[in-house]
Amino acid sequence: MQDKNRDQKPRQLLLVDDDPNLILLIQDYLEFQGYEVKSADNGQEVLDILEKYIPDLIICDIMMPDIDGYEMVERIREDSRISWIPVIFLSAKGQTTDRVKGLTKGADVYLVKPFEPEELVAQVESSLKQVNRFQERYESNVDLEEGAKIHVPNNVTLTRTETKVVQFVSEGLANREIAEKLNVSQRTVESHVSNMLNKTRLHNRTELARWAIQNHLVH
Image (tube, rainbow, N blue to C red; front, side):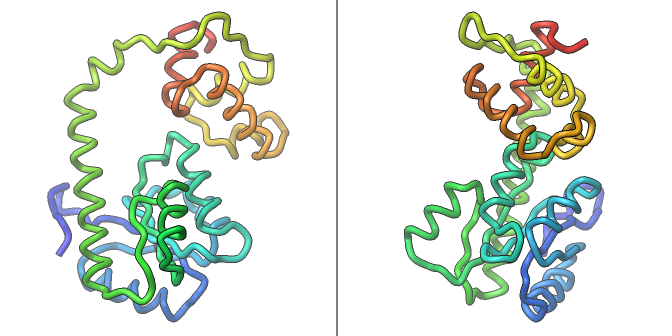
């Protein structure tokens, strides 16, 4: 059974697969274990859902129409608002190269189909406990982290558009929301964020936002 450490509230899972029979099977089993489960059948639907709903964990097939699991998890990892969400990949491909690719793209766990439901539940519980440990460590060091100075290479300059993008990033907006405000495509915003991370040699959007605030780039 799941860890009921957090106010006895059921942990919320997002299950993604284009096979409706598998969705029903896994969803029934997870709900029986006490989890609250939402479902989707492709990566684009997941990204739309994540604009308004943030689950505790995502269980996702890889080969799906529209946006596949690889692209979906890459987009999630680029967005600091949701980048922390653990992702479990489900796939019929069980070669070592397939597992390595899935984990390299950003998945936390790679399960090969067919799998035992008990194994999936064990991986879900393990991933959620790992997130809890990370959150506890973060909370215990939050004062130190907030006071730490972000260092980047000398003479880093941003274009006018990049400055606008980083201001919205600092406000906590997702790439899609920024794209709407600037009237550009989401891909264009993602490109600007990637360019700024390369320029500053920072690791993620959170560090980029902190650097912008510390250097008064955000008004």
